[in-house]
Image 1 (cartoon, rainbow, N blue to C red):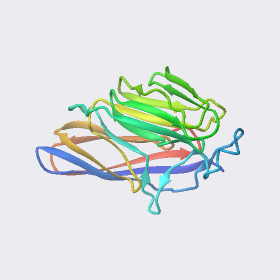
Image 2: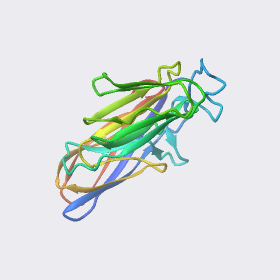
Image 3: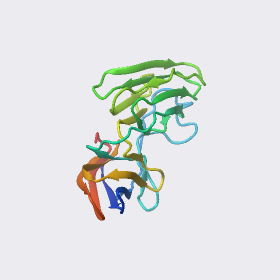
Image 4: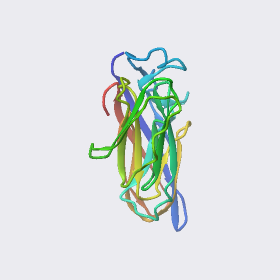
Length: 230
């Protein structure tokens, strides 16, 4: 399968009040089949519960996509409470593949496959934050804390090179991961100048300046290629 042209569109509106709510929908203008993984190890497990992809965009029949992160860059505000998240390794994929949370949150990984998996977490500078072997089904890593904002990558180095997850960590509350259907809301945004970002691991990133000071509407378009690095 050759490279597939892609686009990501975000529409957002600013509501009324002393603080504002950005709402919108993330969609992809060229929904296409996902890029399958080349499974060279543990084929009796990897793919047994469904297709396994090296890249994929979760789009509905109207092109609206889940698994995109929308956030304000340059924002400040009361930091949300840290959370605890569980990420599964099932069918030789990370689930969920994309997650966003506040600085100080903790993540635990579980192996739900009857094969050896590995969890290596890379910080925004590419340094290893944690590295764990999970040889037994049902085994969990210790809860790993994320001390600073940025994008962290998670990989499996046990022969499953297609497995990856992306964790975006924020020091403000103005972020969201789109669910199926692509909708998002960023609540309680104070007046000010920001950059609105939409990011997807297989489509890349789009950004647009936004001035929050009253009713307004904006739209963003991201062009990328499924099948190559964003």
